[in-house]
Amino acid sequence: MSDASNMEAYHMDHSSHEQSAARPVSTFKLEASRRQVLAVGGISLGALFLAACTSSPGTGSEQSGGVPQKGGTLRIAISDGSSSDTLDPGTALTGNVSTILKAIYDPLVVTDKDFVAQPALATSWEVNSAATQWTIHLRDGVKWHDGSDFTSKDVVYTISRWLDPKFASSMNAFMSPYLDMGGVSMPDASTVVLNLKKPNSVLMQTIGNSLSHIVKDGATDFSGTTVVGTGPFKISAWSPGSSWKVARNDTYWGGAPYLDGVEATITPDQGAKLQSALSGAADVTDLIPISLWAGIQGRNDLVLETIKNQRTWIYAFDQRIAPFNDPRVLDAIKLATDRDKMVETALQGHGTAAADVFIAPDSSWNPPGLKPEYAPDKAKSLLAEAGFPNGLDIKLSVTDSVPGMLDAAQAWQQAVKGAGINVTLDQYSPDTYWSKGYMVTPAFMSYCPQVFPPSRFDASYRSTAAWPYSHFTDPALDKIVDELYTTTDPSRQIELTQKAFLQARKTFGILLPVWADAAYARSSKVNGLFITIDTVDFRKTWLA
Image: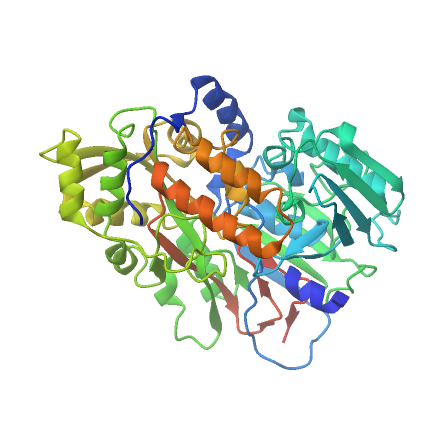
């Protein structure tokens, strides 16, 4: 594949649970995982992606043609920024940081829309037949923004930061079960070898995500304009939670961008952000809530760039605690959810009913023929058997800090009423939800964009999961995933991923009822903007 094409890529079965085999996660494991989540959990404040949800594919959008013009500064309005933002890729906390990181850094690989790893700073890689050794070949001729050469030392240093808990890197959850620094070597300046502690045949897809950008060997200060990357833009101004600027990197290995630079302004209020686009003060925005789309549709000066099935809403139930420790209750909750009604109400038709797997319904990885089931009478019967003949009361923890979450919560509240489930919404402020509601209360909400599907197992399902949403483990699932991580056959990997998710939806208290579309706003003068699942990519953008 050419460098140019590489850059384009850059851009219910309700059978009973087997309680004897599956078991709740211990309290000790919960506390350890909670500390990890709190270290990076602020990322959930953003409209873009959650720490547990990485490896986002790109999805291009057709924009007006013409000959690309060099010059000009793109202005972007972003609602998700914080005064605690940092330019450390491993601890990216907001969508604002996700956006600037893609501008100034590069990862080793990126994943395309089919979750196939494509070259970035790595040009090729091999894995042995046992899936225990990866050899990664690096791109020659890449320069850091300070003019120094990119080498294997930079990759090894970055990996050391992933693996060392003191850096609180989100990548630790995905790498530390398989690798320690004793298994990392660099035979020469352009090669890195990873000898794993146990098989992982999907390692390269796992590191093709928004948290895995490579930093320079020895870098320790990520707080200002001294930060250097290998990306298409260099940072020129940085005011956390307020604004930032980047300027074109004329020596970028992928070809210098057309834009002179990008300027971002943090605009927390969703209405004010939209108004900045309507008034012409901003050329691009980050995600716009569905409820505001009508203000853009039909205009000649603005375009709504839509991403199909961008995210799923997560409703999680703690299986250590009654009534969610009863499989009949969990099955009833899933059967009671009118998913089509949720698409109509919360999403205003902009989404798809889903069947409780972390795979978008239109993905080639989705289990064939899998459809959600709505059976309120069966749900009532299961609740009666479980000791709730008069219905079930649930208190669901939510926040309005994520655009659309409160709408999705209210829609679910209505969607389960027909089965006698009464939901009370316990709304937290943005400052408290991710520490006192999420992963803490018996029932809570979160979200996840499209991700490399197997990455969800280490995130939320395996016995060693970093973010065990339902605090539950299933040895049968672990066994399937172990087999998945030993096979290097791509077709077999997909089959085992599907098998594992079908197992998970039977036993875990995780409801994924819909996939929601999402959209950015852009000026009609903006061309070549590459929209990805988790942010926007400016490297081929130009202004008419």
